[in-house]
Amino acid sequence: MNISAKSSKPKDPVKPPSAKEVALETFKAMDLDNSGMVSFEEFKISMEKKSRQKLSTIALKEFFDRLDVNKDGQLSLEELEKLT
Image 1 (cartoon, rainbow, N blue to C red):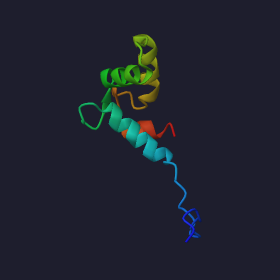
Image 2 (spheres, rainbow, N blue to C red):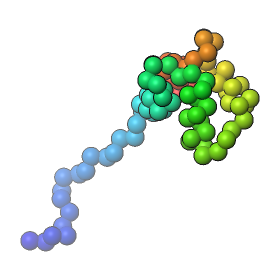
Image 3 (cartoon, rainbow, N blue to C red):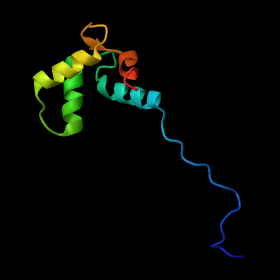
């Protein structure tokens, strides 16, 4: 028996996550209090943690406000999914 022989059965290719799955995982990581919404403070903490440095609050707020489509001061999963 040849141990180094490869199986004739093809391996299942690893499927990359969909854009929706990536948005969901990103949202879950930012929703620190598990409220189902991401506040600016949660967004700021998450972005600084990801970048490993302090970021400009003004620049982050401008970015957050662009993502906050309905202007309620929080990010929903749906708003994040619109980026994909």
